Length: 81
Image 1: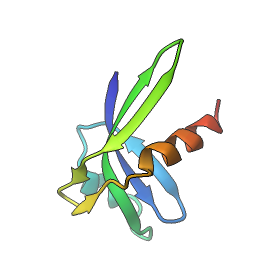
Image 2: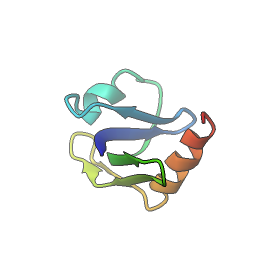
Image 3: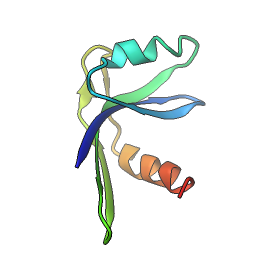
């Protein structure tokens, strides 16, 4: 199971990245974009079923995950499969 961080930007959508970088460091790469939510994402990809779960919060951005982030990110990623 891969555990990473994510930020959802208004207009841009989701950015998923490695845990070695802080949410604030990643957000600074998109200075003109508003942060909607941020937290951690667990991705469990198996042959039977895929699970994407978002949760938690970003202390550095003072933003929390939203209850629908998991479903929204799952739908977004399914566009590329």
